[in-house]
Length: 249
Image 1 (cartoon, rainbow, N blue to C red):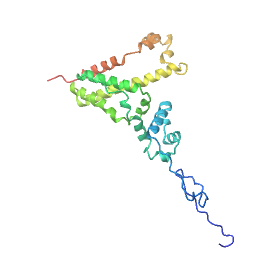
Image 2: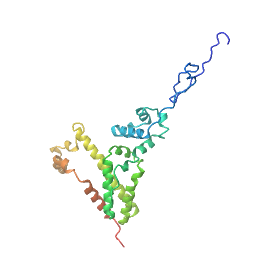
Image 3: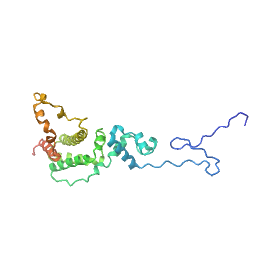
């Protein structure tokens, strides 16, 4: 080697996190050229459980691949080998949630069957309020939950509704279930922070009686009056929907 010529350093091996591993070539302990072992395998169930917890505590907007990777002690690149993107991760959080409650024994009568399925749908999501934060996106669902839509539409058809009416009946029942649970969650949160989240009734005074006489009169008893039995309300909705059925020929 000519004087003054520097010996080029051959880079050492790179681990999966793109960090250079200390070069131990020629080491006396026989570890010459040995690479670090592969990174530990991730537990798919832990990934999904972490995503569900983030959604439950902070909402869907707080969920990201980077955030989940950090909390399971990995890197985003490693996580992408298990989950394609955030949308797929959201689908995975919903997968299997519909089996949290066993499918109920359903009555034979189509009307009663519709009511039973709608009540089951409400009870299922009420047990897992975090699901509402995922469903608000409107483009994800648990495929195993679609049997409920199938049952409601089939029962509506059996009772004489047209195809469009049957689909609308399902949508109406779903909107009630979703809306009821969203507002119930909001009411519970307001009750926990009464100073920060006042009910609209707290805004009414005697001066509003001329313009809003009925609301002003009912305001002191509003919390009591707005309580209702979910099954009774769903029954009323189903009966109203089925009243539009074609008369039998």
